[in-house]
Image (cartoon, rainbow, N blue to C red):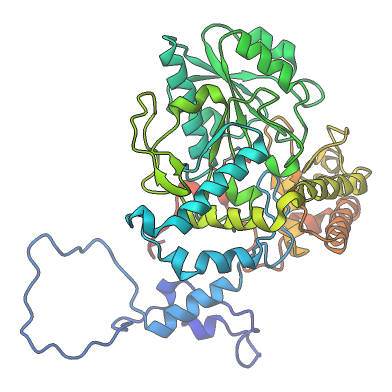
Length: 495
Ligand SMILES: *Cc1c(COP(=O)(O)O)cnc(C)c1O
């Protein structure tokens, strides 16, 4: 079928609507069609050397306009924070002010070359330096390193620091304590450093207890990784006592700061015993993310770990910023070429400068919004941890199970209602989890519309569950086979 007949409906002139159907590029291709016209060559063709041509890589034959329309049409089906509400728990899909984009696009920043002499890059270096200082102020920690490219990379850096500190003491510890509510990157980062992850069960109210940690923390444990607030949206209120216990038994404390959006200006991470933590600039400090775009996961450390930080470090001498060339014998070395993810760091710098002390207000509103959603849905969805939470709340499908309706059905129906589904089936400790993080950017009207959609879904579960089983119906594709898509991706036109 050609692309045009595919997008036509029988008995309907033209195409189906302005939301155009779009076949695969392989289906649009016409043998011999090309995307570029070059003038006729005035030299005789020379055959490529043996081995330089590939016959295994097939590409569809397409004109330039075919390709432009294809991707432009696909882009109109995309859903982003700029399209609508995106309450994906633990991901902090907040609005990213366009001012940040504008600054990142300024030629002096976008075109800056990291090999320029420092006297010609004082402005860009000032952005880095101030960002380090602001992040230290937000976390209450001693020093910052902007090199890591994502939260997971920050975790790896932090665990390497903890390992370097242990080695410097002559310790050879082999285990890392990780709560059962942790993000999967926590055990992965520990494993990359050779540690065996030891699961710490959370207490009945969703937070860690000192007793559970005391039971497992021995002199073979290098430390503990704790997400605070945790992935249930709860503040780990025993954090300080746990940190003291871990320190007393010779370990260090990693703080996963992915949920910092809930506590900016409220939690002093240094004072509660964090030795190293990462922040996700792309979550908390407003860089568009999702879909694999660039991120940035700086770490902040306590005084204990400063000597081990990756280098070189940025220092200010007589008002001039430069990279410190002096030897740092205990440094774990570089983890990123040049300056880190400069564009993302710059957006975070702009965001923090714009809000200033109002960062605290952003956290307050993020918490208020999550608790509003929670209060307005708790009578229709099961709420396993009913106490006040911070920036996100976790429901389950327990009440809908009786009608054979699952969390997946709820999520798919939300798409039909025009909302990006929340995070589902995570954290793993909650069966059928629906984890909602509205963020501070959503207005009362948006929250109410989301709540109304969720309440209508709860009602449909009782009155007409087949509507939920069929969802989504208003999308280009219906339910996709996610397992097969992940396990057996089709990357060429051969099906
Ligand atoms: C997002 C997240 C991470 C990982 O961060 P990335 O930037 O995606 O690598 C780690 N821990 C928690 C709790 C997170 O939400």
